[in-house]
Length: 558
Image (cartoon, rainbow, N blue to C red):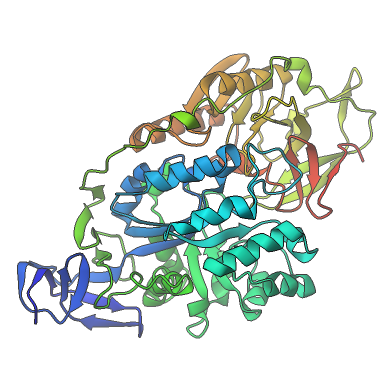
């Protein structure tokens, strides 16, 4: 047996190939695993610790952590995540291919295996104004980079079902190079089968076991999502059996930095799944091998000779908190801290100054004329991206429909920020529950225009203007005063500050929103999804109220 660099001796190895625990030493040579090795330059006795493959997030938008990949890795390596499949469609909707390239460049030369899915829907739909439009011809050159392994979530499911030529051109292009990921919330029956038959192999949007099971039985890989906004694990876990678990993956989709630090990442999903009754080894298989197998990532996902030594060590199988994380044979995180230097070398200058509001916008721009008819109101659903369409009798003052904060009916605006169009979509929303102020964000999936919610036009205008002047971010305003600001100068989506600073600013932001009486732990997460025009039922874009089921702009009054 060839002498190896490092030998991890005395561990309990999680064999995800046969779902067992083996008492076997792990040799590491040139960053790869050598099982059966007996001699090494360095021998480390792990004293009975469990050793699992590095965890993999099957689908996420790194921009939603408000951190670039370099900073994201600093937070997630201590939690055992060594790989993720990134869909950079947030920055793509702001900057196009240039934004995707920046994210991919930032992910180079860090102790983390970043894979990419080429963003399929920029914009997500024709019912919003994004900063860029990407065609199949724009996307195809991305696949020359071997890290690009799929076409990202095909959110334009009407385009698939009703045979939009450009949509199908993208799908065929994606299939030539790898997988095509899906996004089809609520889709069932014949339309679901047509969507799948186009070549789309996965979905992360199921919210009920019935929906997920229908997709599973139709052949889809089901990603159980447990992020900061959408929490679907508890509802979907009942579909998982030992027989079908190979068709299940874990993903976060969107995860905020404080949640990453305080709760965890994929390790958090594993622990929660175990608490809900899932076998621990099966949970680890879902978090590792099943994602690697789906994407045919042959060098990661299990502890086998020849694969990269991406390893997680922990002491309690029923509650696996990572104690050590190894990436390509190097110890990179230990005792909740990243212990290797991760350099920030990306030049983000072209991603800054991405917020452009026309001078013509004033407080009067937020006025909504009305006649007293019932109005459509967006109804938030806790911990879900779906929303309700509520019909509510409005309050009319001087022929204007105004917010009714006593009944938690606040005004909302989405202001186009890319091309100085002056577009402002206006509507009303229920579920934020605060008074005497406004909150605003340049994170507004997926076009990322400025989203503002408030109970008075003055504070809403000040909040929007604050974000324009600061180059993007999130803020809270009350009675004409700025209470808190989280700057996000990189495309209005991410910060170039250290993760600890970003978390500190986020905490101050959430405290400020709570001071207005907002009952939500993090109102900015649901706020960021209300403009998303591809998830039912009622949403708001810069073009107006969107009835997603009709895939059409509808009036406020009904």
